[in-house]
Image (cartoon, rainbow, N blue to C red; front, top):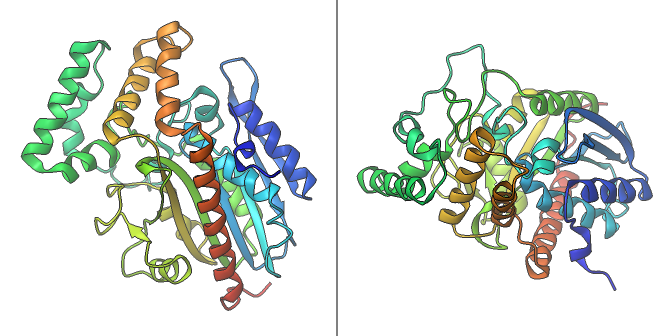
Length: 368
Protein backbone atom coordinates (compact mmCIF):
# COMPACT_ATOMS: atom_id res chain seq x y z
CA UNK A 1 0.00 0.00 0.00
CA UNK A 2 1.33 3.46 -0.93
CA UNK A 3 2.30 5.53 2.09
CA UNK A 4 3.51 9.10 1.60
CA UNK A 5 5.43 8.92 4.88
CA UNK A 6 7.86 6.54 3.16
CA UNK A 7 8.89 9.36 0.82
CA UNK A 8 10.54 11.25 3.68
CA UNK A 9 13.98 10.48 5.11
CA UNK A 10 15.68 10.62 8.51
CA UNK A 11 18.80 12.48 7.30
CA UNK A 12 20.50 14.04 4.29
CA UNK A 13 22.34 10.87 3.20
CA UNK A 14 19.17 8.78 3.15
CA UNK A 15 17.27 11.54 1.35
CA UNK A 16 19.93 11.81 -1.34
CA UNK A 17 20.06 8.04 -1.86
CA UNK A 18 16.28 7.83 -2.11
CA UNK A 19 16.10 10.78 -4.49
CA UNK A 20 18.73 9.34 -6.85
CA UNK A 21 17.04 5.95 -6.78
CA UNK A 22 13.59 7.23 -7.72
CA UNK A 23 14.81 9.88 -10.15
CA UNK A 24 16.76 7.24 -12.03
CA UNK A 25 13.86 4.78 -11.95
CA UNK A 26 11.61 7.37 -13.60
CA UNK A 27 14.06 8.21 -16.36
CA UNK A 28 15.57 11.40 -14.98
CA UNK A 29 18.71 12.84 -16.49
CA UNK A 30 20.96 13.24 -13.44
CA UNK A 31 23.80 15.57 -12.55
CA UNK A 32 25.59 15.76 -9.18
CA UNK A 33 27.44 18.92 -8.17
CA UNK A 34 30.00 18.45 -5.40
CA UNK A 35 29.98 20.84 -2.46
CA UNK A 36 33.37 22.10 -1.13
CA UNK A 37 32.62 20.97 2.44
CA UNK A 38 31.77 17.58 3.93
CA UNK A 39 29.03 16.38 6.24
CA UNK A 40 29.35 15.76 10.00
CA UNK A 41 30.28 12.14 9.23
CA UNK A 42 32.96 13.21 6.75
CA UNK A 43 30.88 12.14 3.77
CA UNK A 44 30.74 14.02 0.48
CA UNK A 45 27.93 16.54 -0.03
CA UNK A 46 26.26 17.24 -3.36
CA UNK A 47 23.44 19.14 -4.94
CA UNK A 48 21.68 16.70 -7.27
CA UNK A 49 19.77 17.79 -10.35
CA UNK A 50 17.23 15.69 -12.24
CA UNK A 51 15.57 16.56 -15.54
CA UNK A 52 12.44 14.84 -16.86
CA UNK A 53 11.06 15.39 -20.34
CA UNK A 54 12.43 16.81 -23.58
CA UNK A 55 15.41 19.12 -23.13
CA UNK A 56 13.86 21.42 -25.71
CA UNK A 57 10.74 21.95 -23.60
CA UNK A 58 9.41 25.50 -23.62
CA UNK A 59 7.50 24.97 -20.37
CA UNK A 60 9.23 23.76 -17.21
CA UNK A 61 8.20 23.11 -13.61
CA UNK A 62 11.14 23.63 -11.21
CA UNK A 63 11.07 22.10 -7.71
CA UNK A 64 13.77 23.27 -5.26
CA UNK A 65 14.52 21.66 -1.90
CA UNK A 66 16.75 22.72 1.02
CA UNK A 67 17.13 26.42 0.27
CA UNK A 68 17.22 26.55 4.05
CA UNK A 69 19.18 23.33 4.65
CA UNK A 70 17.24 21.68 7.47
CA UNK A 71 13.99 22.48 5.65
CA UNK A 72 15.18 19.98 3.05
CA UNK A 73 13.46 17.16 4.92
CA UNK A 74 10.18 18.60 3.65
CA UNK A 75 11.28 19.52 0.14
CA UNK A 76 13.13 16.28 -0.50
CA UNK A 77 10.18 14.22 0.73
CA UNK A 78 7.84 16.18 -1.55
CA UNK A 79 10.09 15.66 -4.57
CA UNK A 80 10.42 11.94 -3.89
CA UNK A 81 6.69 11.56 -3.28
CA UNK A 82 6.02 13.25 -6.63
CA UNK A 83 8.29 10.70 -8.31
CA UNK A 84 6.86 7.70 -6.46
CA UNK A 85 3.33 8.66 -7.50
CA UNK A 86 4.27 8.59 -11.19
CA UNK A 87 3.54 12.28 -11.65
CA UNK A 88 6.46 12.64 -14.08
CA UNK A 89 4.80 10.24 -16.49
CA UNK A 90 1.47 12.04 -16.04
CA UNK A 91 2.86 15.51 -16.79
CA UNK A 92 0.98 17.38 -19.54
CA UNK A 93 2.43 17.21 -23.02
CA UNK A 94 5.15 19.79 -23.55
CA UNK A 95 5.85 20.30 -19.82
CA UNK A 96 9.26 19.22 -18.51
CA UNK A 97 10.30 18.98 -14.85
CA UNK A 98 13.53 20.12 -13.24
CA UNK A 99 14.22 18.98 -9.68
CA UNK A 100 17.02 20.60 -7.69
CA UNK A 101 17.61 18.38 -4.67
CA UNK A 102 19.42 19.95 -1.72
CA UNK A 103 20.59 23.27 -3.17
CA UNK A 104 22.12 23.82 0.29
CA UNK A 105 23.41 20.31 1.10
CA UNK A 106 25.65 21.56 3.89
CA UNK A 107 22.70 22.95 5.84
CA UNK A 108 20.68 19.79 5.19
CA UNK A 109 23.46 17.47 6.39
CA UNK A 110 24.54 19.56 9.37
CA UNK A 111 20.95 20.42 10.39
CA UNK A 112 21.32 24.15 9.78
CA UNK A 113 19.19 26.70 7.95
CA UNK A 114 22.29 28.44 6.69
CA UNK A 115 25.04 27.56 4.24
CA UNK A 116 28.61 26.72 5.30
CA UNK A 117 29.32 30.47 5.08
CA UNK A 118 26.57 31.06 7.68
CA UNK A 119 24.61 32.73 4.88
CA UNK A 120 20.84 32.61 4.72
CA UNK A 121 20.50 31.71 1.03
CA UNK A 122 17.13 33.44 0.87
CA UNK A 123 18.81 36.74 1.80
CA UNK A 124 21.81 36.28 -0.53
CA UNK A 125 20.19 37.16 -3.88
CA UNK A 126 21.00 40.88 -3.92
CA UNK A 127 23.15 43.00 -6.21
CA UNK A 128 26.42 43.17 -4.28
CA UNK A 129 27.70 45.91 -6.59
CA UNK A 130 25.23 48.26 -4.91
CA UNK A 131 25.23 49.45 -1.28
CA UNK A 132 24.16 46.68 1.07
CA UNK A 133 20.70 46.94 2.67
CA UNK A 134 20.63 48.27 6.22
CA UNK A 135 18.38 46.70 8.86
CA UNK A 136 18.34 49.11 11.79
CA UNK A 137 15.95 46.96 13.79
CA UNK A 138 18.32 44.02 13.66
CA UNK A 139 21.19 46.24 14.75
CA UNK A 140 19.22 47.06 17.88
CA UNK A 141 18.57 43.39 18.64
CA UNK A 142 21.76 41.66 17.48
CA UNK A 143 23.58 41.41 20.82
CA UNK A 144 20.51 39.98 22.54
CA UNK A 145 19.74 37.59 19.68
CA UNK A 146 23.32 36.31 19.43
CA UNK A 147 24.83 36.15 22.94
CA UNK A 148 28.29 34.69 23.58
CA UNK A 149 26.88 32.32 26.19
CA UNK A 150 23.84 30.08 25.90
CA UNK A 151 22.22 29.67 29.28
CA UNK A 152 18.87 30.44 30.83
CA UNK A 153 19.84 34.01 31.63
CA UNK A 154 20.85 34.82 28.04
CA UNK A 155 17.74 33.12 26.67
CA UNK A 156 15.52 35.09 29.04
CA UNK A 157 17.26 38.32 28.03
CA UNK A 158 16.71 37.54 24.36
CA UNK A 159 13.00 36.97 24.91
CA UNK A 160 12.77 40.15 26.97
CA UNK A 161 14.45 42.20 24.23
CA UNK A 162 12.14 40.78 21.53
CA UNK A 163 9.05 41.47 23.64
CA UNK A 164 10.16 45.04 24.36
CA UNK A 165 10.86 45.70 20.66
CA UNK A 166 7.47 44.28 19.68
CA UNK A 167 5.71 46.37 22.33
CA UNK A 168 7.38 49.54 21.09
CA UNK A 169 7.27 48.95 17.33
CA UNK A 170 4.67 46.22 16.80
CA UNK A 171 4.84 42.47 16.23
CA UNK A 172 5.31 42.75 12.46
CA UNK A 173 8.18 45.22 12.85
CA UNK A 174 9.87 42.83 15.27
CA UNK A 175 9.58 39.94 12.81
CA UNK A 176 10.84 42.16 9.98
CA UNK A 177 13.81 43.26 12.09
CA UNK A 178 14.81 39.70 13.00
CA UNK A 179 14.08 37.88 9.73
CA UNK A 180 14.27 40.54 7.00
CA UNK A 181 17.97 40.02 6.40
CA UNK A 182 21.13 41.74 7.61
CA UNK A 183 24.55 42.24 6.03
CA UNK A 184 26.79 43.49 8.85
CA UNK A 185 27.17 40.51 11.20
CA UNK A 186 28.68 37.35 9.64
CA UNK A 187 28.03 35.51 12.91
CA UNK A 188 24.43 36.71 13.14
CA UNK A 189 20.97 35.52 12.17
CA UNK A 190 19.66 35.79 8.60
CA UNK A 191 23.04 37.00 7.36
CA UNK A 192 22.91 37.79 3.64
CA UNK A 193 26.66 37.76 3.02
CA UNK A 194 28.95 40.16 1.16
CA UNK A 195 28.94 38.18 -2.08
CA UNK A 196 27.24 35.24 -3.80
CA UNK A 197 27.36 32.00 -1.82
CA UNK A 198 28.27 28.61 -3.28
CA UNK A 199 24.59 27.67 -3.32
CA UNK A 200 23.59 30.85 -5.15
CA UNK A 201 26.30 30.33 -7.75
CA UNK A 202 25.28 26.69 -8.16
CA UNK A 203 21.60 27.52 -8.60
CA UNK A 204 22.51 30.22 -11.12
CA UNK A 205 24.52 27.73 -13.16
CA UNK A 206 21.74 25.14 -13.01
CA UNK A 207 19.20 27.69 -14.23
CA UNK A 208 21.47 28.78 -17.05
CA UNK A 209 22.24 25.20 -18.07
CA UNK A 210 18.75 23.73 -17.98
CA UNK A 211 16.38 26.65 -18.56
CA UNK A 212 17.97 28.71 -21.32
CA UNK A 213 15.48 27.35 -23.88
CA UNK A 214 12.36 27.74 -21.72
CA UNK A 215 9.85 30.53 -22.23
CA UNK A 216 7.40 29.67 -19.43
CA UNK A 217 8.75 28.57 -16.04
CA UNK A 218 7.02 27.73 -12.75
CA UNK A 219 9.18 27.55 -9.61
CA UNK A 220 8.14 25.91 -6.35
CA UNK A 221 10.58 26.48 -3.48
CA UNK A 222 9.91 24.39 -0.34
CA UNK A 223 10.11 25.89 3.16
CA UNK A 224 9.00 25.09 6.70
CA UNK A 225 8.75 26.76 10.09
CA UNK A 226 5.91 29.26 9.72
CA UNK A 227 2.21 28.69 10.25
CA UNK A 228 -0.02 26.03 11.83
CA UNK A 229 1.05 22.38 11.97
CA UNK A 230 1.14 20.91 8.46
CA UNK A 231 -0.61 23.84 6.77
CA UNK A 232 0.87 24.82 3.41
CA UNK A 233 0.89 28.51 2.61
CA UNK A 234 1.54 29.52 -1.02
CA UNK A 235 3.59 32.73 -0.92
CA UNK A 236 4.65 35.11 -3.67
CA UNK A 237 7.50 37.58 -3.23
CA UNK A 238 6.96 39.53 -6.46
CA UNK A 239 5.33 42.99 -6.39
CA UNK A 240 1.62 42.82 -5.66
CA UNK A 241 0.66 44.41 -8.97
CA UNK A 242 3.02 42.26 -11.08
CA UNK A 243 2.13 39.76 -13.79
CA UNK A 244 3.81 37.11 -11.64
CA UNK A 245 1.40 37.65 -8.78
CA UNK A 246 -1.55 37.75 -11.16
CA UNK A 247 -0.52 34.42 -12.74
CA UNK A 248 0.06 32.87 -9.32
CA UNK A 249 -3.48 33.81 -8.24
CA UNK A 250 -4.86 32.46 -11.49
CA UNK A 251 -2.99 29.17 -11.23
CA UNK A 252 -3.11 28.51 -7.48
CA UNK A 253 -6.23 30.38 -6.37
CA UNK A 254 -7.25 32.96 -3.82
CA UNK A 255 -5.16 31.35 -1.07
CA UNK A 256 -2.01 32.95 -2.47
CA UNK A 257 -0.38 35.34 0.03
CA UNK A 258 2.32 37.98 -0.40
CA UNK A 259 5.21 39.17 1.73
CA UNK A 260 4.79 42.57 0.07
CA UNK A 261 1.33 43.41 1.41
CA UNK A 262 1.46 41.83 4.87
CA UNK A 263 -0.91 38.97 4.02
CA UNK A 264 1.77 36.29 4.49
CA UNK A 265 3.04 34.66 7.68
CA UNK A 266 6.50 35.64 6.40
CA UNK A 267 7.69 39.21 6.83
CA UNK A 268 8.97 41.35 3.97
CA UNK A 269 12.63 40.59 3.27
CA UNK A 270 15.63 41.37 1.08
CA UNK A 271 17.48 39.00 -1.24
CA UNK A 272 15.16 36.03 -1.68
CA UNK A 273 15.74 33.67 -4.59
CA UNK A 274 12.22 33.83 -5.97
CA UNK A 275 12.39 37.59 -6.40
CA UNK A 276 15.73 37.22 -8.19
CA UNK A 277 14.52 34.51 -10.58
CA UNK A 278 12.73 36.72 -13.17
CA UNK A 279 15.90 38.76 -13.80
CA UNK A 280 18.05 35.64 -13.88
CA UNK A 281 15.60 34.09 -16.36
CA UNK A 282 14.78 37.28 -18.24
CA UNK A 283 14.11 35.38 -21.47
CA UNK A 284 11.10 33.65 -19.88
CA UNK A 285 7.85 34.32 -18.04
CA UNK A 286 8.45 33.13 -14.49
CA UNK A 287 5.81 32.27 -11.90
CA UNK A 288 7.59 31.69 -8.59
CA UNK A 289 5.93 30.52 -5.38
CA UNK A 290 7.26 29.50 -1.98
CA UNK A 291 5.44 26.62 -0.30
CA UNK A 292 5.70 27.28 3.44
CA UNK A 293 4.58 24.47 5.76
CA UNK A 294 3.88 25.01 9.44
CA UNK A 295 5.61 23.15 12.25
CA UNK A 296 5.90 24.52 15.79
CA UNK A 297 4.84 27.88 17.26
CA UNK A 298 7.04 30.74 16.05
CA UNK A 299 8.66 31.50 19.46
CA UNK A 300 9.93 27.91 19.64
CA UNK A 301 11.23 28.05 16.08
CA UNK A 302 13.04 31.33 16.70
CA UNK A 303 14.58 30.00 19.93
CA UNK A 304 15.88 26.91 18.13
CA UNK A 305 17.47 29.12 15.47
CA UNK A 306 19.17 31.30 18.07
CA UNK A 307 20.51 28.22 19.84
CA UNK A 308 21.95 26.82 16.63
CA UNK A 309 23.52 30.14 15.74
CA UNK A 310 25.22 30.23 19.15
CA UNK A 311 26.34 26.61 18.73
CA UNK A 312 28.19 27.22 15.47
CA UNK A 313 29.71 30.48 16.72
CA UNK A 314 30.75 29.44 20.22
CA UNK A 315 29.99 25.76 20.86
CA UNK A 316 30.71 22.29 19.50
CA UNK A 317 28.04 20.86 17.16
CA UNK A 318 29.27 17.31 17.84
CA UNK A 319 29.09 17.61 21.66
CA UNK A 320 26.15 16.25 23.66
CA UNK A 321 24.84 19.82 24.08
CA UNK A 322 25.32 20.38 20.36
CA UNK A 323 23.39 17.26 19.48
CA UNK A 324 20.54 18.31 21.78
CA UNK A 325 20.38 21.69 20.04
CA UNK A 326 20.40 19.93 16.66
CA UNK A 327 17.43 17.81 17.71
CA UNK A 328 15.54 20.94 18.72
CA UNK A 329 16.28 22.61 15.39
CA UNK A 330 15.28 19.52 13.42
CA UNK A 331 12.01 19.33 15.32
CA UNK A 332 11.42 23.04 14.69
CA UNK A 333 11.56 22.60 10.91
CA UNK A 334 10.55 18.97 10.34
CA UNK A 335 7.33 17.43 11.57
CA UNK A 336 8.62 13.88 11.82
CA UNK A 337 5.23 12.20 12.08
CA UNK A 338 2.99 10.46 9.56
CA UNK A 339 0.17 13.00 9.79
CA UNK A 340 2.50 15.92 9.04
CA UNK A 341 4.17 14.09 6.16
CA UNK A 342 0.80 13.20 4.67
CA UNK A 343 -0.35 16.81 4.84
CA UNK A 344 2.83 18.04 3.17
CA UNK A 345 2.77 15.41 0.41
CA UNK A 346 -0.88 16.07 -0.42
CA UNK A 347 -0.56 19.84 -0.56
CA UNK A 348 2.67 19.61 -2.54
CA UNK A 349 1.01 17.32 -5.06
CA UNK A 350 -1.85 19.78 -5.47
CA UNK A 351 0.53 22.70 -5.99
CA UNK A 352 2.57 20.77 -8.56
CA UNK A 353 -0.54 19.79 -10.50
CA UNK A 354 -1.80 23.37 -10.39
CA UNK A 355 1.55 24.62 -11.68
CA UNK A 356 1.69 22.07 -14.48
CA UNK A 357 -1.89 22.83 -15.47
CA UNK A 358 -1.08 26.54 -15.49
CA UNK A 359 1.97 25.94 -17.64
CA UNK A 360 0.08 23.71 -20.08
CA UNK A 361 -2.76 26.18 -20.51
CA UNK A 362 -0.51 29.20 -21.08
CA UNK A 363 0.63 30.36 -24.53
CA UNK A 364 4.14 29.35 -25.44
CA UNK A 365 6.62 31.79 -23.98
CA UNK A 366 9.53 31.30 -26.36
CA UNK A 367 10.36 30.02 -29.79
CA UNK A 368 12.64 27.00 -29.52
